[in-house]
Length: 599
Image 1 (cartoon, rainbow, N blue to C red):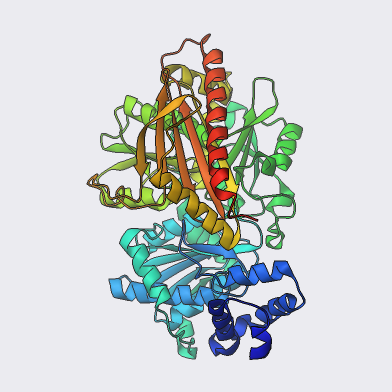
Image 2 (image 1 turned 90 degrees about the horizontal axis):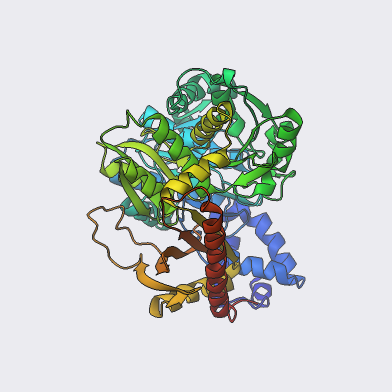
């Protein structure tokens, strides 16, 4: 395409310059065919193609929650081999500047391009002078965190976009502590990536720096020690085989069957696997609308299998197996999905109950400001220290663990179905969560109870809690502007209240804080509003997603505690109605601001 024809496309000057660079610079040769195809579609008059081009060249793909991820395609705001190589090169430069051990471990999931991207990253790291260990079979993200620490690596890389749509992929960057990069290290890596001016090519004699653990050796060399560690996080001694309990499991075309299933089977549980969803399916996720276990519909096939097998529980992990979703038999005998907050409550209650006489004196529980306050209330009632105002992303849990290595993590979680226990994995882990929830459900089943019976007992003691989240999609450049306008407006003019409750406290996480913890004091584009009235409370939190084009609006409502069982239904109805009204009014106020920016 000539300069003149590129000018005729009516692109903004900065976009045109960026596109021309990707057309002319040999650095971008690998992505040129896809870019030329996109430009041809723009030339043919496709409005969709032009919007794609503008967004693809609108910015450099940022490091958000968990690293960098986005739609695969040409352009600096897309995942492609060039952006991946720049990221790997920047990581290598940052490691060198920090004096980290010059060794990196790499794991990938089942997404399209994941294996290719993993080997591209390995080659670039080796070209930059690093020793590289690659697990050449799809494996979970938390296994990478465990291996970085076990192998003494200076960094880790996971090629995955978690539960994003199938057209996305990404790279998660981990530090020497096995945690996603955070704070100053995060900033240093991003500066190094943005400062990359050349990409050295792998020399023939550097290939020996890449150590590939072949598929037939991954189980013995990597899986076995990881599985042993996961098993050690359980809190029920002995086999669960005699409990007469079975469950259905799906990895949603990902890697969870390599981690959760062996662990559950080792505990004596019968696990029925959804065979069609154990197939990686070329990264297409063809049997689900979304491979996100937060969505109950993702577990449709697993529920059908559980019904057919007479199982009591359904478990699902997302494609990189760091999140867990679940359905359990309800009072009517059918399967009912359990949201992320309530799963965390059930697991923590299970741990507190089984370890109540042996909880570590230095134990603590870590959660985020958008996770149910019920977890903090429960943990404090058992004498545990709690940090419950962390920003979203398990790298903040890991940051607290790094700050206070003398403490023992009894439990950590966040509302988006992420859970962890123990100190040697510094990320959420779907296998550990599956183990804890399966133990809890199996014990309840053996005693003639359901998980919902457990929840009612917890609510009567600590108060009824309900959490709901609205995801307001806002794609493209206009979407980013709309989200920014909402945050700016509510920072300058906070709402006075919703649904009859008054705002009694505003917390702007971009303002400086002095808690004494570097992790808790990290700035974040998050607004939190505490509401109170008539003996009830609710928190509203606004947070732009770090991984997807959306604004998340969280509502967390609660009643007082010490309820009699016959009081609970009325309190539930009251709080459920309250949270619906609060969220409805908050969404309406947000939409009123966004409307002028979105098409």
